[in-house]
Every structure is written in C-alpha cells, then in structure tokens.
Length: 133
Image 1 (cartoon, rainbow, N blue to C red):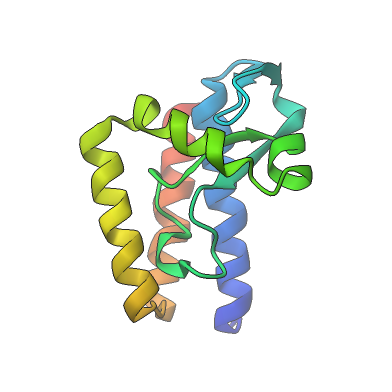
Image 2 (cartoon, rainbow, N blue to C red; image 1 turned 45 degrees about the vertical axis):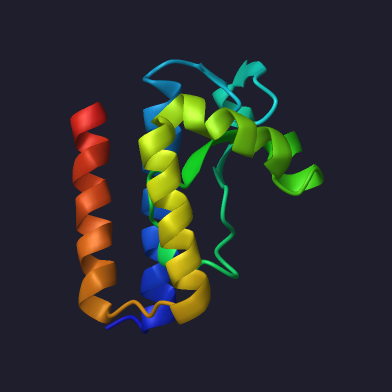
C-alpha cells in the first residue's frame, strides 16, 4: 500500500493529464488561460488559479485548474491577474463566484484528503481521460 502523500502525487499526475487533454481538446495546440497565446501542447502546464499550498481543497477542482503555458505558470508565478480576468469567460460568472466561495471556505477551514478520497480521484480522472480519447 502506498502512503497517502504518494497517492496524492499519483492523483495529481492523473488529474493534470486530464486537464491537459481537456484543454487541448485532442489537438496539438491549446490557448493559455493567462496570456491567451496559442501554443503547442508540449508547452502546457495544468495551472492552478488558487494554489495548492494555501487551497489544497481546490487541488483537484476542474474550475480551478486550466491549461496554462509553462512561461506564465513557472516564470510569471501563474500570471494570476490575467488568469483571473480570463477565468470567468472560460467557466462562466456563476461558477467563478462559486469557486471564490469554495476558496474562502478552504482558506479558513483547510482540507484533508482521506485515502479513499484520493483513490476515487485517481479512478475518476483515469476514466475521464479514457472518455476524452
């Protein structure tokens, strides 16, 4: 049996793969959520709007994670101003407001994943990847 931190790492890998597949829509290019540039999929990260260090409960939240170019994600620390301006367009204002409410809740209360939570996440996103193929 893998320890919970290792399971979370595996879940993150599977979830990020799903985000990349979803946002590339089966193609070889994607549009960065932050800068809006069209780039090759090999330059895509699964960028979190609310970072996992402070908002771990949003780590696997599909509304919080989108295809982002490696430059914006890694070198501009998420390019969050532009990300935040473009996110309501991508997911709609109602879902964006709900995401902000979830973020406020997790910021105040934190979040702990159980072993079964993480196993379900892994299976859910493996299945979603298959459905996109």
